[in-house]
Amino acid sequence: MITIKIIEKNDEENEEYTLEFPKPNLVKPSSIKYLTPEFPKKRLIEELGISANILSPYLEGEDFIFIHKSKMWEGIDLYPYEVLSQRFKEVLPNMGNSKYFTYLKDAYTNGKVTDLIISFYHNNHLYLQEKQKIYAEKGLVFIICENIYSISNQNYFKPNNEDVQCVFWVKDKKIVKRNNAILEFHEKYNIGPTNFEDLHFRNLNHEEWLNIYDKIMNKDLNLYEDEIVYHSLFTHEFFYFKVYLTPITVKGEILIQFTCFDISNTRRSELKAESYKRDLDLVQESSRFAIRYGPVNDLNDWSPMIYDILEVPQDNRANVSLDSILYNIISDNHKKALNDFKLNPEKYDYLFNVYVPVKSYSGNDKFLSYHAVYMKDLEDDSKSQISSILQDLSEIHESDEELKRSNEKLSELLNEKGLLLKGVHHQVKDNLQIILSLLNLDMRYNKGNPLETLINTKGYIQTISLMHEKTYESSSLNGVNIHHYLEDLSKRLLLNSNKPNINLHLKIDDIELPNDIIIPFSLILNILIENVIKYAFPNHNDEGNLWINLRLNEEDIIFNIQDDGVGLSDSNVFSDLSSLGFTLIQTLTHQIGGKISVIPSYNGLHVRLVFNKNGVVYED
Image 1 (tube, rainbow, N blue to C red):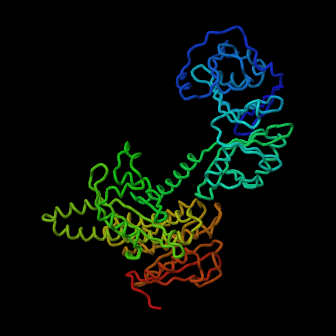
Image 2: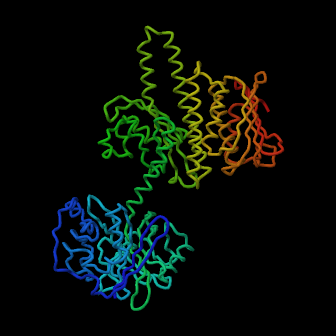
Image 3: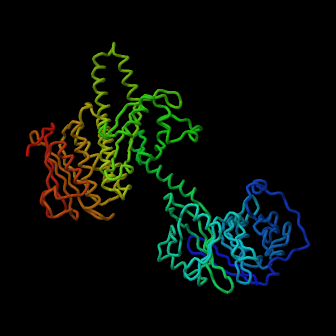
């Protein structure tokens, strides 16, 4: 007896139905042959080895003629007859009079695309299981077949598909048999013995897996697909397998067959691409930065922005390694200095800053700044890490050179601009150092949460970037109007927060603050507003108010920020607030010589910061 189980996959709910008939009734070859046209893509399908049934319409889709047959049927005796040039309903009468035929007709008549999973059983033994995609193109109906499982009727433990990497079988929640491929895989990569309890699915927790197990054993579910993850005890690598679970009957007993395909290379590539994207998102916010980090002796590749910085042609990028892309073009002296920093970081106080002139891969002169932080692991030096930032300063450097070349005609202006450019260089260097220091501290504080570190660092970069933007808009490059800066910064932070119901109330005097004060002060404001967004109004639709007030009292700046949210602490002593954010606030407050305190409030949190507008330090 032949049993065909068909599952139609759709977005709402899968539909399943079953056909049953004696084996001789599956295929009934006809003596009548029809003329069949040549079809497009025939050569491509044959060269690529795509398994496909291709049908030509007969009587406007009332029937179809086979013009190409899938090779997937070869090697099993369910489909031994030649069907080419014959009508579908004549040679497959049971299929032709079932719902399956409506999929063919809908594809031809209405352009509908249907995804199916079809399982063929003979006397309750699974012979063949495949995915099918049915669609129409250029007047023909294509049935593209992807093998999930095929088995010889002589040996129920031998898969016929040579692409299958590993197969094993489960009964009574135990792995009862493995094929040679999976045994060799376990031995080669020192995976260790794997039991039923050790199976880790990508999309299931253990309780969900047990539920799927029961459904398959009860034949309530004929197919489940997922991924299994293995961890090598020897190399510490992860291996990923696409797995199909199907029930089979062997000697009257139901087993679950796991048919596995090794997709480790694909999955690792996807994970690496995701890592690159996170780097790229951070870099793109900060205008032509490339980032590299990782263990000292096994650094990650540079982020892809370095291709643009070093002007690597698009058609040559595949041949240039992101690991050695910079090292290949810097001078021998710079190579020596970099290697010395890795070997003797204490000699550099664990900070390395250098300007690097190079010839780009397109032959142009480039002027780069390279800044690195050595994060020493005091317990295990092999776990020490380096974080590096490379910035393209070519335009600034070229501007500097142009100003020098024009010295005779614009001596007075050049002197002023020269000083300003040097200030910009030092300011960029100092700001990058601040970012690296904050990144270093955040990585140590949030060891188990790198995403939080990236989000925080992104906020710091945006805050400093806005300061530069306001500086360039200002008539003076030495300071920023605090009114416009705080207004833009607070509005941007709230806009990016996706908290639409927080009302912002601003009252800020028109005061110009020097750059060496505005940077730490803006970072304080960034952290305070982020804490309000995250903790004072934790839910998306929470309603509330945020008041920001800044005024000048003689030489003192008095800054107040207050919300009516849930509050952070019962303490009125700022030093009692021990989170990373408040630790940074206290450090930055000390940097500008200010005093910060928590003001008692009926609800929410009220913080006051007082500091001298010229940076005069308060004495305790």
